[in-house]
Image (cartoon, rainbow, N blue to C red; front, side, top):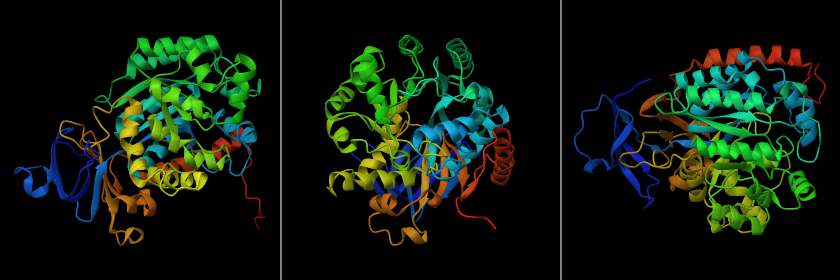
Length: 464
């Protein structure tokens, strides 16, 4: 991991600044953790940098921000494919996660972060850390690895999921007092630590897993602590039935009645919001983490992203988890986000390449409440920067690097990842994690986990 001063030169720089300027043959000068100068290379002052990075044939852009992930699910990648949602949860995901140890939690977090760094993600929102995953060990891993992360502690006091009562796997059950106490402890220990890279949030379970009183209590505590909260909402049609039958309202009505609307909240998925509800989300600046891969794989449906963007709903992108997406590659997520909505509304002009790049950078920064610090390459902002090699075969030729990145790219073309002015990956080599050790640990731990959980994951075709 390097620090100090860095000069990135000869790059194709996507600034994402208010003017959305692009600098061909551009340069960025970094001192410690901040951007000091950015512009055309010929216009920059002469700087004697400790490290010079030649970005020829590379896009230089803000680091990608994933606003909905499950760190613990990297370890169970591919363990619940082609399964209906309730079975997906009851027979596989909850059973496996309900048998985690703290060591499993840390190994999975390291695996997930290795993939995120490798594919250009610099900041993330982990939506629900169960006590059994080991919050403290995960925070230590984030501190060591060098990423920027919001770590949300699960908060729950019921065992349902939407309108299905008492279906939670026993190993996943926690009570409210334990949840709130641990969140308080971890907030006091980790919030703002690791040079400001770590935040501690409240991760509310889905509808049916949290009572109305606890929803309101968490909303109050969130604002008292000046932190954030996140929850799955409107991922499935069952959510709509649940709030209608139990509260006589719609999703945003329920959220308003329980103080859940506002810029402090990220609603993950948001597939089931009706048109009229989108105006409420826009007016209250409530964030939506759009997860197109997860939503299509689990057949949840299609969020109304074109309408949300028109109304000004703050939208960001999320990869979700290993069983629901199977990758933590935000560039692949951008491609899907740019494609599916064209087919859904039968209009090739909606959700452009530029739109999804904004969601994956500035949109994520807004959702995390750090858009004054990251999300664009501007003087005074923190140096969260990635370099993408446009010389790769699948990106050649690159007549329009912006659209080429979205429609032809994937995370394996990322060459360099920088967070807080520190290089976490250079020349496609991880510097703060030993990739081979991470993969070896993951392979070992998943075998033991499957054995403890008594779960058989095998292909449908015969193995000879």
